[in-house]
Length: 139
Image (cartoon, rainbow, N blue to C red; front, side, top):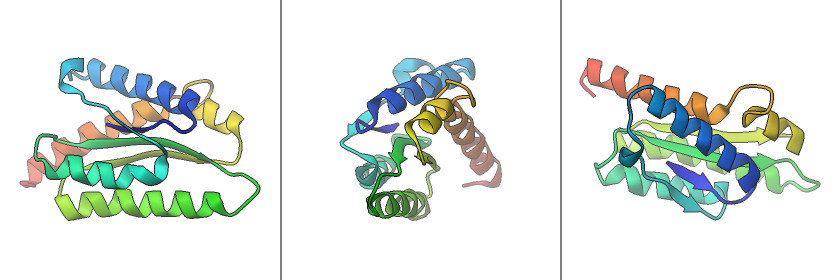
């Protein structure tokens, strides 16, 4: 997993949900590595480097970008999404987009387990599904 330290209150909750979902589906915690990065903008490079090692069946990207008063949000959210997609396409390894893009802190917290489920857990399930799918089609 690649997790952003920026908005850590949110990303730590997502990481917990992700670990829990993986464990519930038979992935032992000792098989899970976490690389912490400063913010969501740094996630794609780290995800690609991890995928390129060949040591991981999937890379799960966890971050949180909350809209502020400037256009910074648009740049970070857009480039993080594009970079995560590129990492997966370039390596053939599932690189899962678990980066929240919200209008408010409340929305982010709700999606990190407070009200609307845990998007970290959803990312873990997406990773498992993609690994199994690619194995079935010979990827």
